[in-house]
Amino acid sequence: MPSDALIRYQGTPIHLGEHATNSIALILHELATNAAKYGALSVDHGSVSVAWEVAEENLHLRWRENNGPEISAPTKKGFGSALVERTISGHGGALDYAWFPRGLTANIRIPMSQVAR
Image 1: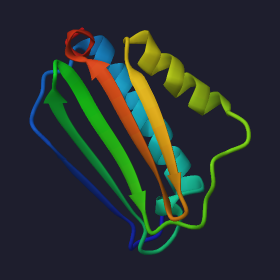
Image 2: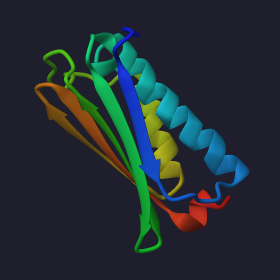
Image 3: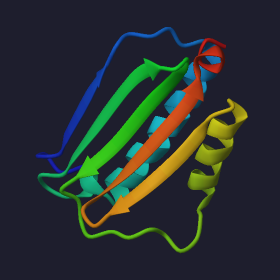
């Protein structure tokens, strides 16, 4: 990761159950790995922000990359992306990707009843 890369996070404290902790760690690890290889964390002055909130009995987590290299949506899904999607759906959640020219945004929603497990 270039020395100028920046990671920010913001959210209210929440309790994660053991199962959810492992799952969310896996999801964030995969997103960070891809950002370091191909995205905003692979270039100087790239940044990532991670924000979360609880609303409507769901955890809403947003991963947003900025100032990365030119990207576009992948043409095929890799093992890591499939694993992330299965992990989120296994918790009854949903994942939406938005591919912008200078960074990826991933919006994740997981019911709080699953986050506490």
